[in-house]
Image (cartoon, rainbow, N blue to C red; front, side):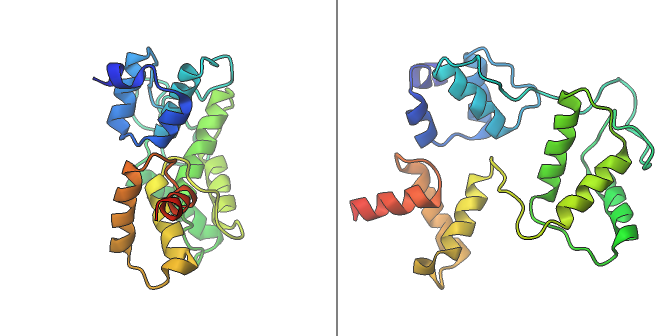
Length: 204
């Protein structure tokens, strides 16, 4: 079904659609793309490149969290990141090390995504990194002034945030924003608040 519906679509049509992660992976496989450990937004990049026939452009590569068949890394600042496990245990260790530098430092929205993004980028470039370097990077993220960059794959969260922050929606509830998100998913536009607002104004 995915093959019949999507194989011949344009990049513009793809961007105006909404696909769950399982649908994207199935579509990617139909196109012969190995998704591996790619994130949702990275799978989208590969699909768009295939649809536009511009696969000579640099595309994100799948990076495995594990290099060997052994057990998870020993959680120590001097340990090398080899068999990484992104779970509560690892996060608790990293946060404990952060608290030694600044006990009152608060979490920042998006910090784990961007920490993982940085870790994978180092591995893609064949750079050996230690957990101390992960701790340093996390500290940089948590002490960044203002908001961290938006997470590419969380269109839902970005829409909800923008909808509730818009002056014209003052007093709106999260539930109301979620209802509008469901409407946006069916609109023939890109899935962000700006395109939602423009489409609503044009069709009002």
